[in-house]
Length: 133
Image (cartoon, rainbow, N blue to C red):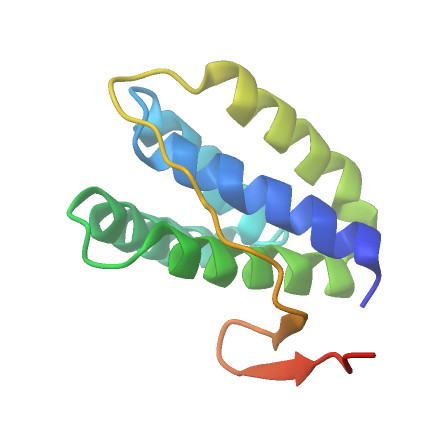
């Protein structure tokens, strides 16, 4: 997978998590669900439900932000792999999420680069270890 796609998906996932704890989550969730639906209106309700479950897990601290960010990065990267023409839409969504992120809470996705890259879709993930020199 293209590094630029992963970078865009990672930035969008982090902005998505921030939106989950913002005042405008309900409207952001609806828009994000439409984007993740990949143009299929029948998928939107399922996407919206999954987004709400993730938002609740984040707000109630059931899962670490890094786990949720990795999940959504994978979902967004998978969408971009299937429909690369949607990169502009994801970029616009990212910009809008960053501009509208307001509220009493904030999310920080942190960590360090240990040379491992988690790859896969939202159902299956694998770890590729980089060789140390």
